[in-house]
Amino acid sequence: MSETDLAAQDSNEPFDLIRADGVSLGRTKPRAAVHRDGDWHRSLHVWVAGRDVDGAPWLLFQRRGLGKDTWPGLLDPTVGGHYRAGEGLAQALREVEEEIGVPAALADLRRLGTRVCVHEDEAGVCDHELQDVFLRRDDRPLTAYRPHPAELAALVRLPLAPLLAFLVGEAITVAGEALSPGAAAPVPTVVAAGDFIPNVDQYVYRVAVAVAAAFRGDRHIAV
Image (tube, rainbow, N blue to C red; front, side, top):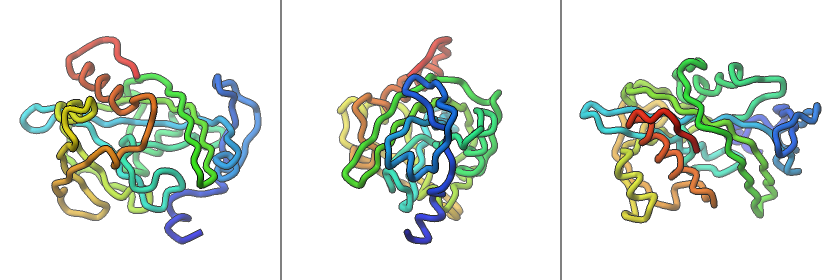
């Protein structure tokens, strides 16, 4: 394993094992073995959304680091990470500051639900997760974030209306801006279907629809 791989994740990090319905099995297992054997475990997704200076909504993605053991280089929720063994939500929120350089508290988050996610590929990864999904409203500029150089290749901000049009097939690309670790300013970027993690549940579209509903002021939103 390369130095980049080691920096991107700890293969020995312990995870609590659960059943597919979320019930604890009372056992832990190292990350690499969990992803090899397909054990169910919990992870956290925090999506950050806001409005630009003209009032237009946007949604923030991370481009996963190239050393990640799953989906390197592809677009993912703003913050994504696993619960370490023994952690609850309040403790797992460490991931927010670790990955994007901005701390978050429970009061900052709006729960969107729990996603059941299964990823199996020819590389021997068998990842079975219950993903707790949250929305954070934050209008600060992209330059206020500090993407972690091992965890993230970039933060990518996409305008919500063009993103929704892209996700329903009305456009083949969507333009936005990207901030790389250590960069002083964002640069223009264009993303296409191949930049997103493949899924069968239209996860990104459902999140984008929920974010649009949140900006409308809807009381009930979910993914």
